Image (tube, rainbow, N blue to C red; front, side, top):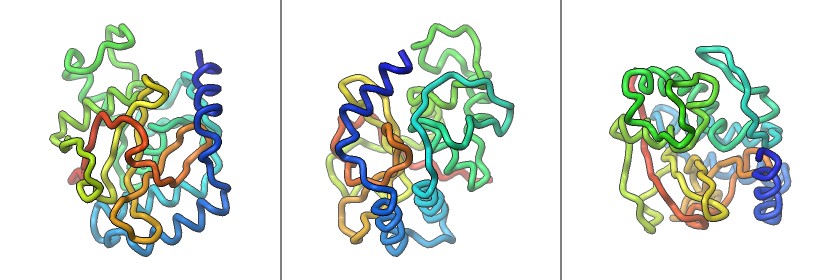
Length: 211
């Protein structure tokens, strides 16, 4: 199953992948249009842009993690890990936060995996669980086709290849244009791309937690 998903991503999306140098250059241009670093959105955008400098091999394997603060090896990951790692830079551990909410409200979360209890190794790395967590935090916003509704520091979820859940972080366009770009790992590591509306959107979130 793992190899099948990896192959699907590689075949469908490799053609859109930029070189590492191109990605880095675009990320540096986007920084010029990012919100102030004094804001949560600005800090999250810069953390996401920093991720484009990391070499990450797409690997959806189940891995046993330390708790809290556990992570898969830095050179591996999937789309959710880009969100998790970006928020951790700001001091928010989605592994712990999602687990604590699931432990208190397990029945509210998707039952896609037929689990009977939370699993700190994988729960926060599943897009449907993150969607429910953000919704429960009051962070859900309307899903529209209007570029101006999506602000740097927002999160979007979508389906790719017709059924695979995916998540990405919204960042400014390199030229400061109206339609923002996204940072995501869709098979070739953290990439910055102009693909906000390319896939069927399933969620829009703005989660700027307070300490």
